[in-house]
Image 1 (cartoon, helix red, strand yellow):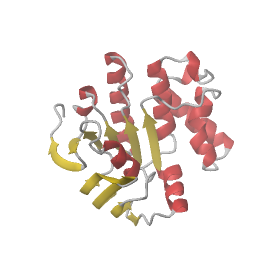
Image 2 (cartoon, helix red, strand yellow):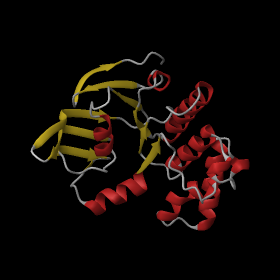
Image 3 (cartoon, helix red, strand yellow):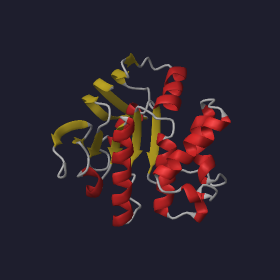
Image 4 (cartoon, helix red, strand yellow):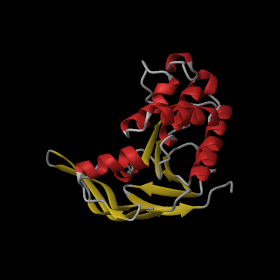
Length: 227
């Protein structure tokens, strides 16, 4: 579904060059949850940006859903809009929009008619346990509720891939466990793959694969602690 082949990325600041990724090769299957682990500066964020087609200044080859990514801006934008979702540590909800409006936004961008938007948004909010909070703005929701809205927004258009950056780092243990179970359930139900950058053992032990990065190199892949 997603395949990275001989990916390298170098940042240049003045005369200083920093190689963020070095000959990275990785294949992600549909419906799996993959954790990217490693210390700060290991290349996790750079790898997420390339997997999410947000950074196209790299060497190597990326295939997504069997299609070669050509570094064309319009191609990348269309795929992100229609086939990818994004979940962030700080939720990144639009503060002036209700939960319903935040979740509806990806569908509206894709030109889905209003009747279908309403049906799909309310179904997704019901899945994440927030149907009765549909009209609440983010400032009236708890951190866990806001993250549930963010997950609903990422999954409402049934993407093939979701990119998640530290999605549980700001949550207490009980809420984090609920969010992890929700991501696993919805991901498997919709055959969506997740790539999760995380330092959080609560997240990584529930992933199907755990990939360790250091200095831009994949050191090893570990089995998760929990099946």
